[in-house]
Each structure stands twice: as C-alpha cells, then as structure tokens.
Length: 538
Image (cartoon, rainbow, N blue to C red; front, side):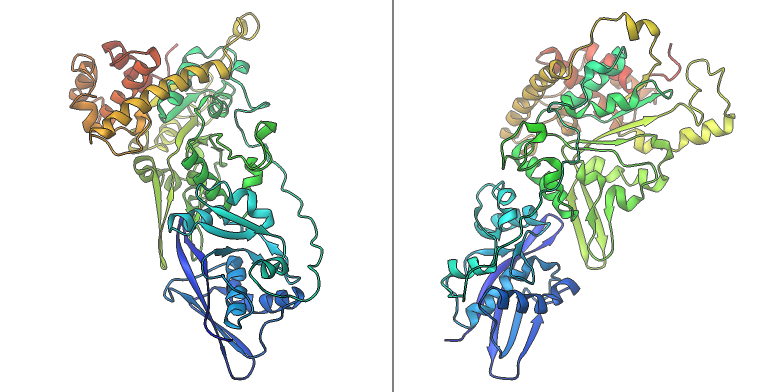
C-alpha cells in the first residue's frame, strides 16, 4: 500500500551537520520525478542516477509520479551522499521496503546500483551521532572509517540489491558483482612511526632543539630565523614526531576535516591501513598532522574558502598538529594576517552569502624566515648583498601583531664542522617525546583541576591555551617573584599585555619540563630570552 515514505540523511555545514528528513510521495499521474528542498546540481542529477541504480538492483522505481522533499526545506543540500536515502524513501512510499525510518543513510549510488562512499562520510557520521541518530548505513568501502566514530552503529553494504533485502524488499535476481575498489595510496604524511624524520639526524643546534622541545611540551608557536641551510626546515619537520598523540576527539575531527576536502584523505593519513605499519585495520590515526603549504598559497588555500560553501584550508587540516610556513616572509601579506584570528580562537570562521561556516583550527604555527632576502644578513652580515631598504621591507612582511602571537622566536645558527663530525650522537625523537609527554601530562592534570574549580573551560589541556587571568591571579598564577622580569618588560615597553601572558605560559611549560610545582624566576628569564632572542647573537 502506498503512502509517504520517510528516511534520513545528513547535510553538512563545515563540521556541523543537520539531519535531513527525506519524504517521498507517489501520485496517480503521469510518470515523473520531482526533487524539492534546495538541492544543488549534483543532487538534482540524482534523479537519473537513482532510476538506473534501482533498475539494475532488480527493483525498479514506480512508473507513477514521484515527489521527493528534503526537510528542512530552507537548508541548501549538496552532494550525492543523499542518493541512498532518496531511493529507499521512494521504495517505502511504494510499500516495497520496511523499517527505513530510523537509520541514517549515507552513500552515493552508481548506475549499476553499487554503493560508493561519500567523501564526507566521517563528518556526516559524527553529525548523525551528535544529533542522536546512532544507526547509520553506509557503503561497504566506508564502513571502517564510519566505525571510528564512537557511538555509531554502522552497517555497510556493497550494492543497493543487498540494502533492499536487508529492509524487507524482494528484488529480482542476484546482486551484480561489484568491481573491487582499489585503496588509495599512502602519501607518506609525516608522523611518529617508523621512517618519520628523527631529531637524532639534526647535528648541533642545541638552542633550537631546546626551543622545539619547549614548543612541543606546551603547544606554543615558534619562529625559526636563520641563514639558508642552518636547519630550520629539518627542525620543523621533526616537531610532529615529539608531540603527544592526539586525543580521540581531535583525531576524529582531523579525519573529518580531511574527508571534507573530497580526496581519500583518510587513506592518505593511514586510516584502515596502519601508519607505517604501526596500526591495525580500522584504527584511528592519532599522529599530529603536519601541513606545509608553499609560499605561493593563496589566502583561501591557507584559511579555507571556495565558491558557495567554503572548504577547510591548511589551518584546519593542521588542527591538532603543526602548520609550517617555510620562507614565511614570502607569503602574501593578507594570507599571513588572516592567521591572527584562528591563532587566538582555535577556529576559523568563513563568511559566505549562504551562511557562515566554522572549522576547528587549533594548530601550532611554525614560521621559518631568513634574516634578509639574500639570506646572508645574519651575524656581522658582511656577505649580505641587500640594501637597508630591502632588509627593512623584508622584515616588515611579518607584522608586529602576528609576531606578538608567536611565543618563541629563536635564531638557528649555522652548524660548525666539529658539530657535523665530532659531536656525540644527539637525542632521538623518542627520548625527547618522553619528556614532552610527561610535561603534557602535568599540564592536563593541572588544568583539569582548574576546570573542576570553574577557573577554566572544560577541555583545556595545554599551557599555550590557558587564559591570561588565571596566569596572573588565583591558585594557578605564576608567583609574583617569578614574573617580576616579565612585569618589568611590560613597564619598559618591551612586552605587550598579550606578550606578557605568553611569557607566563612559557614559564609554566619550562616548569613542567623541570618537574617543578610552580615556575621559578629563572623560568621567566628563559621564557623572555626565548621570546626575544636577538638575530645577531653569536
């Protein structure tokens, strides 16, 4: 008996999703297929796609007029991920399947009836679970990544024929043989697994290595300034290898953000394959991401953008990990200045005519810069070929407001021959990571106590994100004697109020690395030195 068929799907806006209620009705009129509810072009094309898929699955759609409505009607719907929900709503309206009202259906349909994963599967499953819809039906090749979402009850199918059988339908014949899907190749994303860059390969650079360890321990931003070949890029590439593993929620957000880019980014990051052979199938990759866009990248590529609905940029793909800008002064000025808002808030807001999209962007910024355009202006600068005007213009490309948000600003000096040949073996990433993990544990416990006392927001874990007021007043403030040097720097105009808070955060991180209960005056002194190390120090 015919009636209104109902199923559910998900419409995304950034990482936030909304449940789409799919309604289908069959009218006693000439054949046709009307799709309502602000579908985009890809979704409009689903009408022909669905008819072919249904016929090849052994259960053709009705020959009468089919009207499908996507609620809420005022929300724009996009993509082919609604295909499966639409065809099952049509079957339900014709009384040919049962029990399709509860699950959320997330899959694209091929003309042969095969189910294909939506590139946004992880984000959509997260949105479904957050909305209280735990039962999810996806394509078989998306089942492993969908199961990464806690609370999701996932069922995966290879073909529409199999879905029809599972929900009480009676298709004709057998399901066609589906061609195997070739998994995407791993792109060698940096990580802490075997083969990842190791700090032991960096010769010398004791000061820069120490700054890298401090940055990793407290999630602080870092500027590496020095001559070409001094090791700035080597150091930056090894930062992910000493960072603590991502917590499950952040790792899931990273997977969802990569899936929003449309590529098989989960396979690129190793989900379901194991990063460098270290994870079992279906495990969630908790390696902090590392994004290193070229200096020719546009502002949209850096912070996100695009027509209609904005896509995440490098700052969001680096969420929970590292955003490395090599040759930072060569980036477009507007692109660099666009980093200021996500550096403060931990998210990026992209405003478009159809609405505002928010993406998480809690990353560690690492900037690398030469002392001048020719790169030889460090030290006494006798070999520098740049004019005073060129040097000044080059230095001004990194604005004061941007640099004020960078906690550590250190000089990477050229390595001496004795450090290349005769120096003892340097510490490995694993050795440094152990100290970083212990410091991170101390921070997490301290700020968890502060959250229980109502002093900070729940979820705060790292010193770099601690509120300024808590660092100056109350039980977690830096002692007055310890912060005296920072107070004097403010009085002499050497530090802004923002810079003062960042020095106090650094002091806490240095104390955590020492295993101390509170920062000491020497911690603040070191923090000030790391923040304002002179370029021409020798």
